[in-house]
Length: 429
Image (cartoon, rainbow, N blue to C red; front, side, top):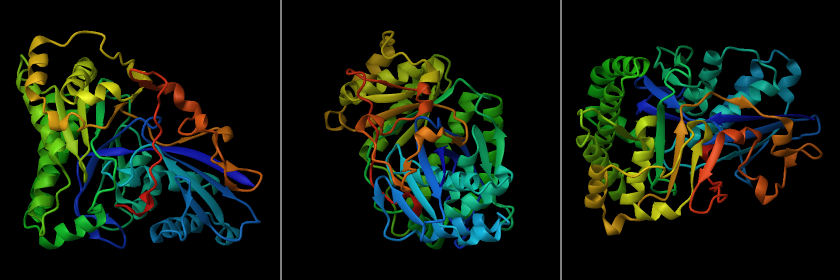
């Protein structure tokens, strides 16, 4: 029995795509740009086994076996098998076990990590030596945003003119802007009411603003965003980031019937970030938000302002002080190591709303991350004796050997929370 285990990161679109040009091929209406997050913090971990004794391909997600494989998963499996060149490969069956470390279907790109992990791991088990750009074409057909999770750092997904040219392009690696970091604010861990796939279809049919965005706004915005990242110009980066997020949600509101992905806490976070930037002495942007198709915020900042931003969030959303949060160890994050500046504390006090003190349920603090990694066999989710999911002791769940780059901070250290929310992230956008 051959078993391979890989870890794939999620990515957060900083210039978003919304709508599919070709739903069958999963090609987008517009190109997009993303930043890959730390794969040891927000990830999908997949183990795949192949053995002659397997009579069918089976899949387990977050501890539950699927009664049938999603059609897109079947498609990418067959595509990869066809590339092997080995006639025996067509008759192979696999056991696939996958888990993700963060909420599924809540607007944090769980499908991106899930399909990137599936495709990358299967390519390893089939010994396919093909460029990642070509592999991204296959990942895209599982989940559009998955093609971007095959690279670290800054990644552009080119719309292309056909299936072969609609692929991910690596722009800059994870070391290009080491000061950049992201604070992921989990507002709601539940699966969103309107899936991305359905929302895209609805917007494409009914939004009058969407064609203008895809043809006039996005091309120039992508060039400006890439320049801001490469020049490490956070003020420019943050301004474009927030404008693009706002416009995406304006498209959703322009859809008939309108789609409401954000909630009251999301809107409050937006107001807080703008107020925080308004008190900067030099008028520059210190923090910038973006929201995918869900209520959860991703707030970018630089290391110089990271601790202050986290303290501000804890002050405004007071229950956060008692909730564990996880951070990339490479950030060397120190919680509450220095007092808030008076004007920041005054802002926090003025923005507190008793009804929203529980508004943010969890924080993840991430550096810019690398692409997928192959894990040691000891990290396998599959028992090599029978090809079935391993029954892991509780202390082993949600951990892996790369965890030296991952750290948890809370009033009670050691309360590292590994989310195992059951969901079909292989069925998302």
